[in-house]
Image (cartoon, rainbow, N blue to C red; front, side):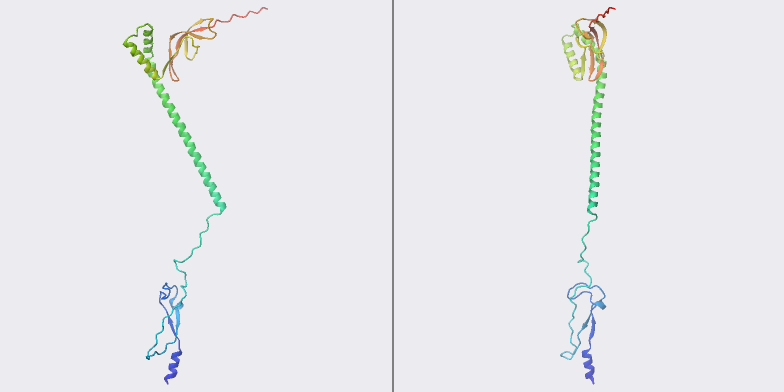
Length: 240
């Protein structure tokens, strides 16, 4: 009576579901439903040699995981953000900005150079004005020294002092002018007398009564001179 039952149990298939999260063959984690995707059919179980139940070797699918691995994903190559026309336009904009910044730097440099030159000129002008103011107060002393020299009173140690004073004043830029024979210049000479002379054809300084002085472009005082002028031409008489 037991034989039909044993034959039926021998041919019956046993459903085995592999719920392991790690594949025993590939050693990779399994993704998905372990109850459905990993289910496998086991061969029929029959009696062993010793009357026991024979062991069924565990089998797994050699297929890889159903889903791609996070580390093995192949990302699509990034596409360029702009087209060739957009890149050309961006290059032109950058070039225009560069030219504008360069022009700004050149303009600032030119302004700085002009400012530096102007400051230097102003410093020189202030220095000349300060020196001119000091030397203008020394002109009466120079006149007294010159008169004493013309009278022959500058001798000995006083001569050395006079020469040293004149050298120092010349080093400061003091320049004297007004010599006999110079052409008369109303901007530099002050005429105290006029003498007609047939030896000149233009107004000329005949005698210098007091020399003039200047420092750079600053006139401290004009020279006082006597002007020799050519005689006036006789009037032309026309007969009626």
